[in-house]
Amino acid sequence: MSITRKNFFKGLAIGTIAAPFVIRSVVGKTNAQQQSSGIISDRKYRWKMVTTWPPNFPVVGEGAVMFAKMVAEMSAGRLEIQVYGAGELVPALECFDTVRTGAAEMASGASYYWSGKLPAAQFFSTVPFGMNAQQMNAWIINGEGWDLWKEIYAPYDLIPMPFGNTGVQMGGWFNRKINTIADFKGLKMRMPGLGGRVLERVGGTPVLLAGGEIYTGLERGILDATEWIGPYHDYLMGFHQIAKYYYTPGWHEPGTVLELIVNKTQYEQLPSDLQAIIRVAALATNHWILSEFEAKNNEYLSIIQNEAKVEILRFPEEVLTTLRVVTSDILAEFVQQNALSKKIYNSYQDFRVKATKLSDITEKVFYNDIQSEI
Ligand code: CA
Image 1 (cartoon, rainbow, N blue to C red):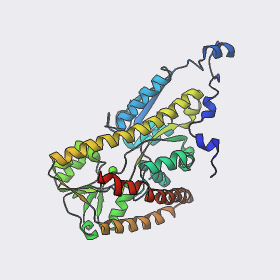
Image 2: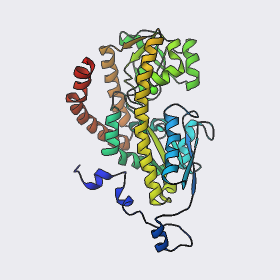
Image 3: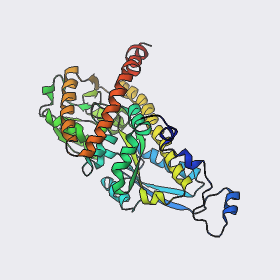
Image 4: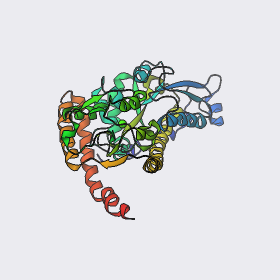
């Protein structure tokens, strides 16, 4: 793709911001009066954002509330968004349909929650052994990702926006050591999504438990292992009190993108400055959430190391190699299901290959050979 000004600024729509005095719906004023006041429209909008997170959930729920405050401040109160935790207005997994039908104007969640109805949505959250946060941001914001994401959501009258990233997650909490791939046989593990399918293929049993049930499941032996997020959220769940081993890396979620979805019809009815405010505030939140995960995970890894008796272990190379091969087989089968998944996978894969070549001689060298020696 050639680099053009249009590509460079896409998503931010600088072109529309450069012409801010577009009059939409101010009653009783002439265009000249509105232009001299510099206000596009004084109409106030009251929107609802439903979320897949429990109310005030650390980092991602906090990010949604922060986004709403930012939008209210930037619009001088013309767009106010009320944020609802999961279950306050609708259950977590009804967010997609709630925004699709316009019952709420926005939702925050992650696209892999919708992969049951829209398999290709998986690529805009995370893929086992796939791209990390930095690479996903580059593919979505500066590559082809965002346009493809918009394309698959458009038939549902939705516009997606990146809204944070967890960074590389941890591999999970285990009460059984993983020395070879055979140790996954019969392993009952909380592991959703494509990672769960990989686990199943190597002989494990993925168990789906809601967040609030995982601790008890692990404590009572209903689960032998569970993945969750990273040191901060895992600590808050208390897994360090009941599991023996904390494994790394989170091969199944190397950089999960969180999303904001907006009802397209209602978005398009907003004045262009409010549309721009939403996009810019979403990108600011995208950045804040990733940074907050990094800062809090740094802090809580130290706390876990100091307080808990848990052993932090790395999956053996042979285990990771087998999981990687199985993932590749499952992805090959997955993209055969429909042409759209294949098209998105090809774009994803093309970007990943190039990103890996670059990181081989930049990020990886720095992490492995330089930073760790300081
Ligand atoms: Ca996870």
